[in-house]
Length: 445
Image (tube, rainbow, N blue to C red):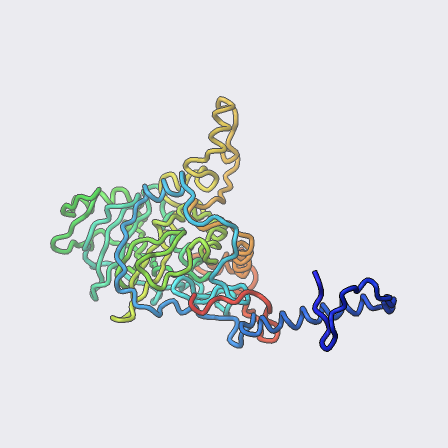
């Protein structure tokens, strides 16, 4: 190729015939420096239209309530579909990509999915132990049963308070007093402190002599509705653990406000929610739930144990996302959930199954010798390095002494030394030390 002639000069048809002067010493270095300067200036100009760091960074609130979601419809929960989908299929996008709903501090803003509590501000032991509850305690004696509980292994029913608010009553199983109810309370407090939306849970004692039925009470069992009678009440109490004073200890779970829309999934988006634009498998708080579920041995952390609720005034309805049913954490739970296998293997664990088959049964599962249980449900988020670090950073903000006091129903115990409060240092960086150069979260997320 021929080079363009210098301005004001005619082209030289025989450039090689002209005598060449030797290049001055250091000329090549000057040329390289000039190229570098031009590249830096060009890069700065190209980035000028969209800076990497904005004055309002880091974004603290992801306003995902902008559009009216009144058209959202209830999606029925199916444990069988959840099992098949997460056992035999690989739902969602499985590429190893960074979480989408994060800000320039690599953190999760407040949204309808998550509210920053622990680590963002100081939380006293009193606040931790209250959790989502509005009052310290309630008494359900005299509250009429308005519906039977036809699903799940835990015996119970539903009652209504004088204002018409519904509570679900769940008893401990006979022979396992305080196991499910204690796990439910502890799990609720942990998940609330971390930042998830959870329902209010209260420990109650129920006097069997004060149990009453509302007119026309029904129960749905296997899609068949029938009357709920005194005989059903006695059957529930026969399956429940009785206290020495003759009463029954139970959990009273306050129904969340709004209209139920069924569970959410840990992948994809909800098509009838215009605010749900981030694929769930790319949400940092859902990915991080895998670490929390492993830490607490939450073996029942399935999609069916979540709940979407349609809340807000007319014209401004939006979906809020809840997690619930923590009765199987830390070795609790009825039936299989309380056995050593839960948390060590999935219901179908192909690798260990083939080892057992190939060895004609001589391969011994590790959980048969050790009772350590740390594996969550398959649907409890995905494993990603940054999301794992994010979850771990929140877990260590609860001091062991606070956990000891927290899980002792009667208050501080002699074996719980140290402070009863959590670290108060916030994780939000100061404006002058905030991480620069990280990808900004879109204003529409």
